[in-house]
Amino acid sequence: MIAHLLPRTVVAVETFTDRPGETVFPGEADLIANAVDGRRREFITARRCAREALLRLGHPPAPIRPGPRREPVWPAGVVGSITHCAGYRAAAVGLATDIAALGIDAEPHGALPEGVLGSVTAVGDAGLLTDLARRDPTTHWDRLLFSAKESIYKAWYPLTHRWLGFEDASLTIDPATATFSGRLHVSGTRRDGGRDLRELHGRYAVAGGLVLTAVTVPE
Image (cartoon, rainbow, N blue to C red; front, side):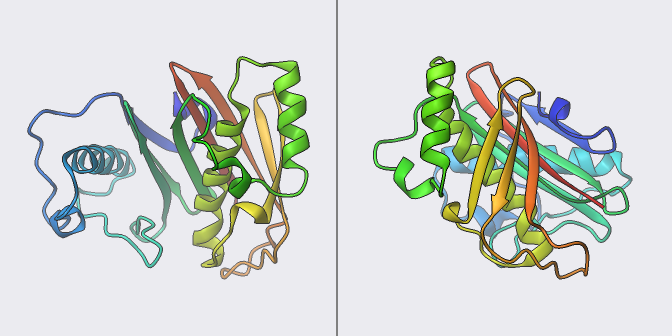
């Protein structure tokens, strides 16, 4: 499902189930030492997806450790993203020579918990959601907005190493093309000297009880 939202140069691996009794990969046990069972299973499965994707790029299995914001640290020359939610785990990776950054996110297709929406909207988002709900009341647009901003952040952080709040990006969503864009309200200066980030673009899908979003930043 997630692969359809990404360029062909990106390798994506996904699964809807965990392997019963699967053990944590060597070198990652400390990362979930105190985690509850559900959290352990989603971590183990999502990391396995990431290693399978990396293997297709020619990288042997190895621990995937977190960085300062708990983002996955990929092998040199690789960019990627991991996501998991109830009933779904996925990872996507690509070569840094093909794509500068990517972010993926999966969420259950349901309304956001009460009280959350106000903390994830930026200027213009409320009007956008009202308009979208009027046109298509069957889609939980609030959850899609949340997921899109999660994918935006996952693509943003590796390039800037700076926090990006939900209020720092205003969205536009086009149901006709199943695409979205996030207009940034903060400086998008990149650490690698690439073109400043002013707007990030992505694609989405709503299917199988899930909301899936993906953002890519061209090289």
